[in-house]
Length: 207
Image 1 (cartoon, one colour):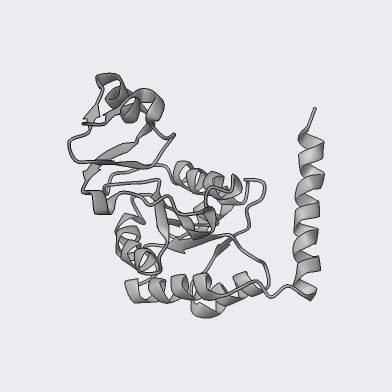
Image 2 (cartoon, one colour):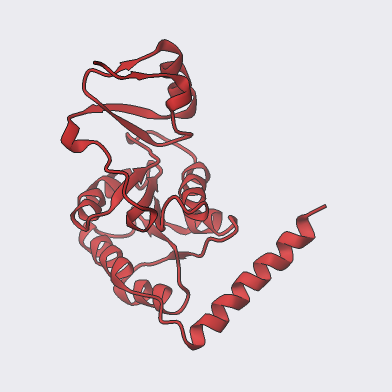
């Protein structure tokens, strides 16, 4: 029996994988187009396994980071991570704040343990992601900066410059960032100060 996808089944953003032969209602296709959701028909073995949040990673890139995003996806899959790809899905101009926000929101909500946002230089995505409460985004450009951002700052979003790093450099940064645990200890108190500052300004913003 064929599965039917309606507008209520669609995610807010990203990609939705469905079994080959799935019926998608016209209204669902309209909503998907409005949200920028890509509906992909795949074989059963490529359907998402609904990994727990700690094994999930949010991934997104603007047009400047699209090619690098696509090159890094197989590495994330190799590491056993379930990817929530929020776009883009082609090298078409898009505003990096929209992509970085989508990645950050998935991490902040707990739906993904970490996130990776890529734009041309990685700077804009870091700025945007750090506006979201609970996010500690780090722009990393080599293994040392990736290691430091995890050990010292407990970063939960990595931003990369798609036009500034080679594929091999980006892979080194990504693997190091994912493999490095937070050191805790004296760093815990400093990260707590970051959280306290965040809370102070959140309280000020509350009417």
